[in-house]
Each structure stands twice: as structure tokens, then as C-alpha cells.
Image 1 (spheres, rainbow, N blue to C red):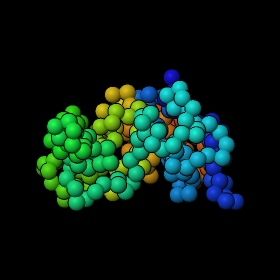
Image 2 (image 1 turned 90 degrees about the vertical axis):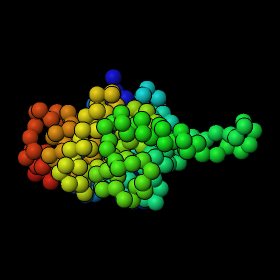
Image 3 (image 1 turned 180 degrees about the vertical axis):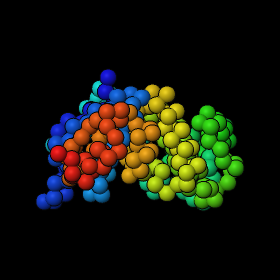
Length: 247
């Protein structure tokens, strides 16, 4: 059963139509690769899923619920998380605080005084999450800005997974990483699949797409021009779709 279903999604900015009736389905535990040249509409499409952009026409159904008119915060509560390319981490804050950034657990002193951030709980739960994911960092109390690019990417993933999402959208998660760091991220994607979490992976790195994704969707000029199983295509065919040379 599909956890996400887009039907006839259209989006324009002024006189420029960016999405032309896009249909897309994603099932629980499925890893779908979304590829396309710059300007194909990938980011716009993903922001229609998260609710950052409202759509002009069409429907967005998530987990059996029509979320077309739902706000971004509601969609996040329903289980949609997106990890943007800039990661949106706070470099001066420590690893644990970044994992709970914006959604910190609080407690009241003696049950009556104003609530304040429960730092001890943050530290304990952050360590549990990193251990469960097999993420290795020097310590949860060091500033995120001191970590490598790959470590920061895994912290962003851990933050998304802390709130038990049903769908995670990843925007170019391996673009600036070294080979060893790339493998750590792909390992986390495989673990998400095992946990039944649906993943949409946006990437220009087709090697990563073919290694991680069971299905590949190609977007060109705001249209889905290919939706193929990984085992029924190859890299050269996908490239031909991306550049408009196929057929």
C-alpha cells in the first residue's frame, strides 16, 4: 500500500509553470530515487510534499489522509521529514542539542515552575538514537561545527529519525562527502528501509541511486518522463532520460 500518493500535482510561480500534472506513489519501506537535471522541478516537487509550497491543482495523500491543504507542521506531525542539502544544523550547539533542535523535551521544576529544556533527557535519548543507528561521533557534547561533513549528515538523519517518521526525503545527502562517508549515509538509508520507513533520495550521483533505490523516477521540465525499476534499467538509459535523449 502506498504511504504517499501524488495525483496531478501542478505548481506555477507567476507565469512559469514548474510542475505539470505530476503523479507519484511511494510505498512504506521503499527507497525511490528522484533524478533530473537542474531546473527539472525536483526541489519544488519535494516542497509540495512537505507543505512548504501549496499546489495549484492536484492532490497529496499521505498515509491514507488527504494532506493537500495541511500546513508543514501538520505534515511533519503526520510523519513527513525532509533533510535539506544545507542540513539546517546549529554549528555552535552540541550534537545532542542538534538532534532535538526545535523540538526539545521540557520539564517543570517541582511541577510548578515554568518549564525548561530537559538537557539530561536530551543527552540520554540522543546517545540512544546514535547507538541504535550505529553512528560514531567523538562525543555528543562537542559542537556540530567541529564534525566532518559526513558526520554532520548522519546527525541530520538521526534528528529526522528521532521523531519516528514514515517518510524521509533526502536532498543530495552525499554530494559533498568522501567515499567512506558516503557509505555511512547509504548504510543508514538501508537501515531505514529495514525499519519500514519510506525514503525519497534526490541525488545527481547515479552510483548512489543505483546502490540504494529499488525504483528510479526521472523528472524533466516538471514532468515525470520515466518511472522504472532499478533492475530493469541501467545508468546510460537513466542519463538519456535526464538529458532528453531517450526516444
